[in-house]
Length: 143
Figure 1: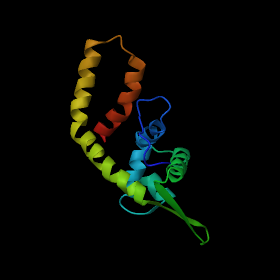
Figure 2: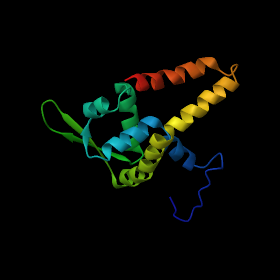
Figure 3: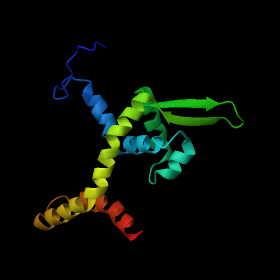
Figure 4: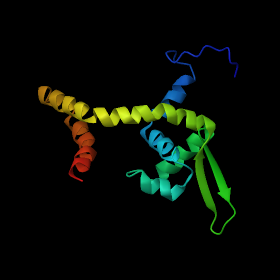
């Protein structure tokens, strides 16, 4: 692509929307953050990121590799060993995502409080969606 193109993410045809979609995905953010610690094997990533299925891990790693954020290295061992690592592009993204992860940790309680206040003021709002969203939060608070 030409460096002189002025990308406009507010345009419905701009490819930057695809980039934003990728980097706004929670699994992509967590995988990139985990790989910022150093190269890891598939199962190690799966163990580290709780709640991430093998299927979604595999799909997300393939998309991140295609986008140039992750490099996949196969070692000729028995059984074959596959390792994933951030590319320079992935490291630059990681440096941008780390403050976002830190922000979410610092502000999570305030957001949960706002949600509770909103839900009490709007009891007819989508109760099913609220219950589904609250389940992982309740589990994390209990454990």
